[in-house]
Image 1 (cartoon, rainbow, N blue to C red):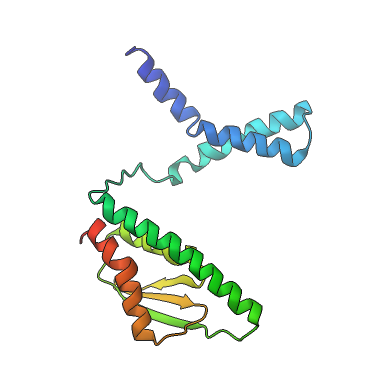
Image 2: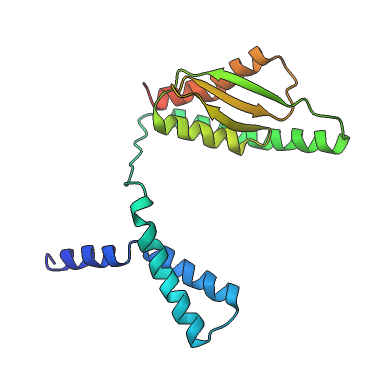
Length: 174
């Protein structure tokens, strides 16, 4: 079995993402709607070349250890609920044709862990009425775009910090 290990590593370097290569080839063939030999060969070349050329851009494997699964599940439940209710609020606002009150809100952050900030960015972008706009250079001030702010900014900032930042601080302490 030890003799197989170097071979696998060599194969992994020659084809860094085999599933991606297969998906690219299938996508190529579907977009071209042809199984002609030239199309298949060119698609195979692209399917091998793209992952190989992009391999240096892929991040190193990052393992996320969740030490507080209850907090993570509570945050996930909250985010799913907020996405659902926010979607309904945005739809209601669009259907009633009332002009929204778009605002850029600045949220001071205590969260500094890169993984926590990445998850916060995902949450902000998944929720239909918010969009992560900018993080200050020192990582302490987040600017988000709110589609329709119906409460005062201070209350909204407190809500963001309580609903998302606090659980993320528990999951990713500074």
